[in-house]
Image (tube, rainbow over all chains, first blue to last red; front, side, top):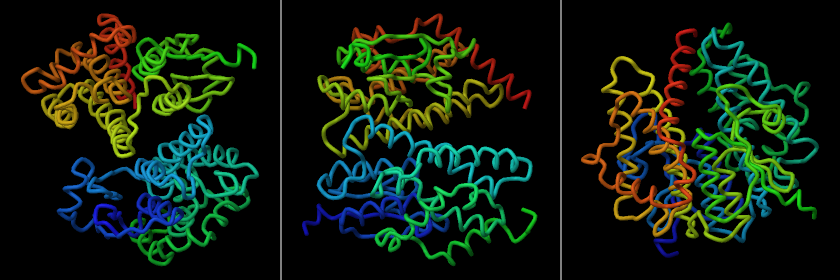
Length: 224
Length: 228
């Protein structure tokens, strides 16, 4: 393969943002070189050069150019490798709605879910309430579809990867129970479908490793 | 399809950079639209609350009876639906960079920008922080007529509506010269070029009214943070 054609991905094993990009690359069958960046220990000169503004992963490098921000990268991959496995709907309105819900997950839901597990006691109640609201909206949006994208995994599903996999583990580590099968049966079913998909399964970080990481972050205090 | 369903409706606010940029795109593409203004500092109309129950914000864009929110998404929709005068670059990499920078402006620059408006102490630190971010935009515009290249595009509309024709007015109200010519020659030159474009001029809020409005917002944020 022409050197310039090669795709490189700087990522972090446990990051849902980094995994979003890997999921899309794998769904589209795009070969890539993966470079692990342990951003919490030390940021490599390569990362600092390729993403000087945010100094975060994921960063995609293709044809000598680098792109940061997971959903921007996903759209780039979609625009560049058009023929295999479309991630976004073709219709302009449906496309906009997919982007809207992905943004909703990113801006509204992810942070509140995380804070509901990890945040200070004083904020906890408010975060739990907001987390419920966010999940309720998503439950409604999902409806009876197999995936947010319909019959196949799409942009919203990819954006919501944290909810499908990481959040369950975070709940286990923190003892906080917000997203249960009883309260959110559709999201529960969706999580199982998503995590069970043969391609997605390949990409997900090992559960025990994540659980240990979260437990360390939350502390072992059961009252937290 | 009936005439009504083809109609484009925009609920916006004269002072909102998010809504003004949508107007720029519609005007550039010659798309007629029915405009309804929200003075959101006063009250939110029942129409707004009905169409945008999640965020309760402007702009709200309606086309063929379907509702769209979030200015970036609306701009992309407009670009895909009305093909003349494209606003997003054709090349996937350039398009990704336009999206990246738009996110940077609306998230980072806006946050730091507003922070610098509400601070009473350590204002120099706040100014320095904001200028560091704005320097990235100075670098990005260097060597180009517009962020979009030869003609204005998506990023010009995002940066234009937010920085010179919104945040700068706030800074002026506070007596801050955030983007002086000596430090930011390219950006200043771009601002002048933007002002020469008729459709941009039509979408810029009146300077005095805007400064007054920004000061009201600053007052509100300060009062809210004291109450918290």
